[in-house]
Image 1 (tube, rainbow, N blue to C red):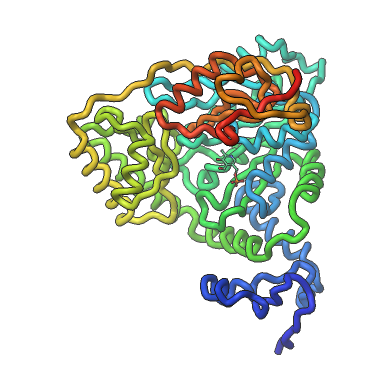
Image 2 (image 1 turned 120 degrees about the horizontal axis):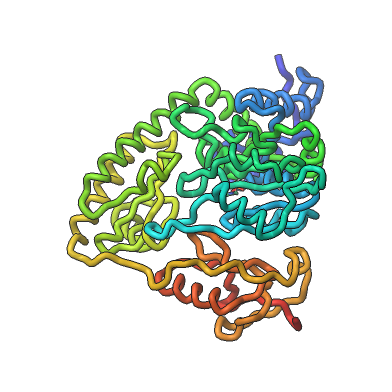
Length: 465
Ligand SMILES: Cc1ncc(COP(=O)(O)O)c(C=O)c1O
């Protein structure tokens, strides 16, 4: 029989006895009893938190087909930071990358070379980069494809995008320019790929060196819990060491246990759960396509069917308006909305009932709005990447001031200006705020798009430059 242990250690709530009653009422006893410390002695395992964790991580690596897997308690963001920080040389960064890529680059030694994003103008959504775009950039930036020159060039790819589209990872990673560098993948939205042949192959299966994956986004674990899959033995020690530097020294045992149990359940049921979600999504798509005035991003352009990209622009509704209607009048919250469309995610948590609710709402809205005229946009081409005069890191440490939008032309931005969604930055720290950028800001604001980067209605710029 196990003796009861009296806690004289952190966390200070002492396994629940010091927890405020309002918290206990909301979250229950169990949560706090499980919230122990990683220093606590486990007699059966000889006190090795590290041993238990590495056993759990090994099982995850086995499941996902990686050499090593690291559990993340600070989201995919910490995985992305860990894989970027140790890099040397240059890295090609498609502009349609998540902000965690930019924040990771701010404190990394590697030099980013940004690749412009092309948009699908019918849907006004950013497209994943193609091999041809990579080749164009390599020529334009005079990057050497000559192996003897040994310049280290890596890349980081988002796989898939929020819209369920993927770059051709295999072809891109085969470009000779990457022979000395690493292929890093942000698979925040693609954890389910591993579990069905009906989905694209996972980035690890396609040979990526490091893949950060948000277990919490698609695979049923708790927010903040993610995994970093490592397939490059030479670089894994540096990436692991970086993670130890940036992640908390007091990881939540609840988070880690949830990751482990999620892994166990997925090993048993992952395939059937993910295929059920695909089936639900495909049936929803077929029903949506039959509703007059409703368009769904065509299947050939979309590699992940579980992200339903729905537009009702033909009946005069922008994505932002549709999202608002669904939330306020039908009690439905979608993942995001943009100029023309909404994105509804179908995951292992969905059922016939949740799909029916969505379908009912869309049908009802289509009926009510069918007499409205189609909506369009004033300008469609995204501004060119602005000239950069400082690195992300220099801009981070520079002195800044806030100025009004009317006064920021030709100033150097100290922050990000990102119409969100779809999340392609107009400028990043260190780049010049051009008149094209300002024009786009006005368009985005006019159509109700949230702009990330304003502070008290003003824009942060570098002082005295
Ligand atoms: C494409 C993409 N990459 C990375 C992240 C960061 O993931 P996490 O929230 O797990 O830190 C997100 C989060 O929204 C994302 O959408």
